[in-house]
Image (cartoon, rainbow, N blue to C red; front, side):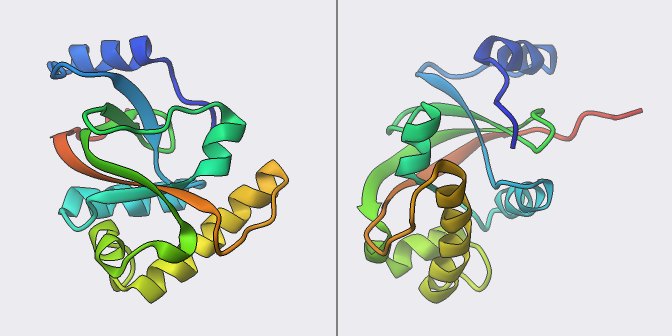
Length: 160
């Protein structure tokens, strides 16, 4: 995904759509590293199946990105950097990849919801992230695991 838009630009888009955010620190975020993966993950959130997300700590540090904390409001963008939803972080921790639990994998809601699926899919994703930033993936690499609540779902903007 490309660089995220500024918070001011995203806030202006939300305001134009009649959305006011609750108090709290506001950040931007996106899901996935391709248009296809982004749309797949956003669809899982819209369906109510996905209520958590994981990111590679090394990638956050490499990119200088904010690491979510409880109470953060996140404007989640789609692969075109348009606001897709607004979430609030309700739980956040950093844990080694090989210590992520089956309970957390189920909250992420991807594939069949199993820890086995989570590990396979996230190993592939984190391996791409590691290659991008010049690191080698390890079973003990640190992962930021957050659980969120959806505050607003935004219909896609018309492209016509």
